[in-house]
Length: 298
View (cartoon, rainbow, N blue to C red):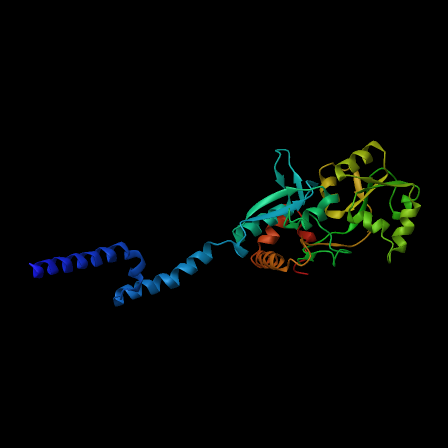
């Protein structure tokens, strides 16, 4: 009887061990010996999975790329008649995003507040006809991609043909613009300062549409502005305006990032270089009739 009882106890203990192993299958299966075929399958997964993940992951792990731009600065960035934000720089940014797996976020900004938006990381960059000259140490920049001089626009029948003719005239300029800086910066700028001092008034306006309305109404005699924007505005307004031959200042555009953000700048710069090499950059410039301004190959 005792022998039977002992056998029963042994059987019960054996069952408990079997059940216990079954309940911990997930925890212990990884330590079980593998057949050569199983080992080969694991090796294949270990080498293939990271490559697949890398090809699908956005550059730098980013999912969005937020571009700050002036929505009233055609042809670089503006709101069209359908209410869509478009322009040369926004097309470039869209292509950069496509190639890096980012979603482009177009963020119209008050140009006077661009630094606050960038420093607060509300935007990733300023990409909208953004002049590098005089700002080299304030931002982390891409290479220059557009040559965009500052010029004067006047009415075709005004009789104004040279910068000297602007003496005692009223000249409009966009607030916080490169043209304003060219006319007012005191460092190594004696010629332009003398020109500015000859004006009857230097009138700051919020945007160039306002400037052209003032010029059309006779409230100002000239507008100091970017040549790319000037060409676009004149083309859309007929033969009523001309650009003076004498340039106010030479300048170049770049994409500006928060000072020190070299990682994101480098990723964008590499993509721009690829776009230049495969012809995409020039094709976008031709779409906006800015091919003569491109300086990437110069």
